[in-house]
Image (cartoon, rainbow, N blue to C red):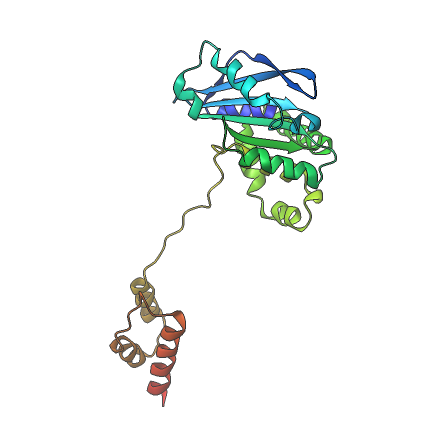
Length: 251
């Protein structure tokens, strides 16, 4: 779970001392440890990270798990009333046999509107193994400039890996792990494509006229004379108008 901690730290969230709470399910008491992270920029924004088992995943909404967690959280010295509506619960769950039942349970938890915003980060032992080895290789090659966020961004931006993942996610355990992290931490900065210059139609036509000696200027004049409403006209109407003008001028 260190990659989650490191990612939150890089996102300028400060780790507070972990605390514990106990909930009861099926007449059995279970104690869990909570790792709070508070935004250094807006102290009302909090992440509570808890590692749970697949069995405990089924207890989140069917036991006193949430009330007990909320009560323990509100008793902490750093808690403020504004945190109640700005806190995100991130449940980390290792699932080596992820099935439709667990998927349904995961969706129910994330869709539940009560208490905190909730996200369930699931991964397999195999995915964790591949990720640990991959991260260690990068750390060994560049220990002084290592960044979890940058590593994840670069990996998710790789089109060949994305194609492999899209074809069959089993082929890409690291991509599966990283995309799960990026979607379960809403503040994660996804990589943006490099901005390109967007040319206007006018500038495109100017370039075309300047570089193409065979362009049909008369057809362009006829097309402009149609006075089409480009905002409402369909692409088909515009293309039809151009074809008619171009054809008539070539006769």
